[in-house]
Length: 412
Image (tube, rainbow, N blue to C red; front, side, top):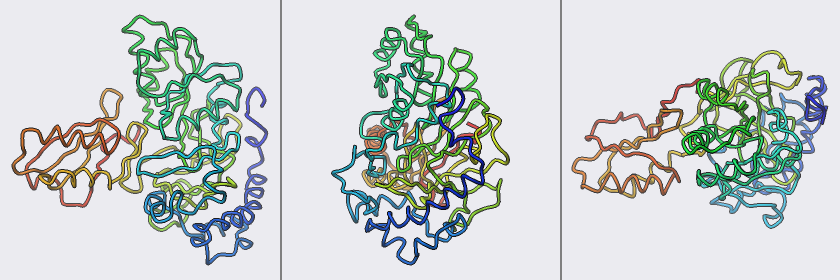
């Protein structure tokens, strides 16, 4: 590490980087083929012939949305792990559910670069407010915090008063978590008269960081940068102090493709984010994330030379991230199945008071007095998040097959 960069890989000549990554592809794909899931998925392709990004683009996509069914057919990981499940560092679970394989590699999620770019350094203390319960987020960010030499307070989510007390007592310099929860902590501290002013820097992910929220957090003394990550490959891209797009991580190859086809789109065009990782234990070859983004031209003013993307620009499918958690159309359908009185349903996601909010709109001809409360309980049980339920008359919802409607502004 230097004063400005995590390592020399971040400032490589782009042509050297592209050549080096292409040279890794044949061995990475050959290694993936050790796993039965990958050998079946890539059976028609010779790894030795995949020696460029153009050749990589000929391989089929593996859709993240398909992992639920693939894992059910071949538990626990769909046959995409090259070593036994018992050799994992952790076995985790994302909503869906999708079971996640955490390898024993140090900072296998590549979060250290994002942590460093956010100004967090060795000797700092950071409170990590991602969930430590089953989901990978907390462990991914903790691995990055440890990579730069931080001490970590495993705050998790909730227990706001206890967390504010810990911040006031231990005086951490940094925060990791969703931007929404950072605001919750600051608000609670202000109301209770607790001093949490030691937190000066934050690395946030998992939820929206609209300009208004970033400005509010900055006005309250916390300079926050964001990263974009998924459980299967770790941190895909991260923001630097330049705040001009997100810089692609050095352990991944990223493509932007036409949703539904997998064909690369011209630079600057919005498309689906597809990632290839070189994790030897749990490789991902052309994983289609379902997220939309676009390549930014040129290099970052901060001096890092890898590709930049605009950040999260929506979903290529209906799967939606709410409060840092993915919600799938199948989950919304499950809620309807639990209550036979309900007809057509639609989960509407909105933004109010710098928080994600979700409301289940459900058609019902003759609701019982307790139906809305019962459906709200099912909504929480299935998605692990609270939301409102609004019962509407039959025929009120559009007949368009949409189960999730994300009505949050795109610049959030």
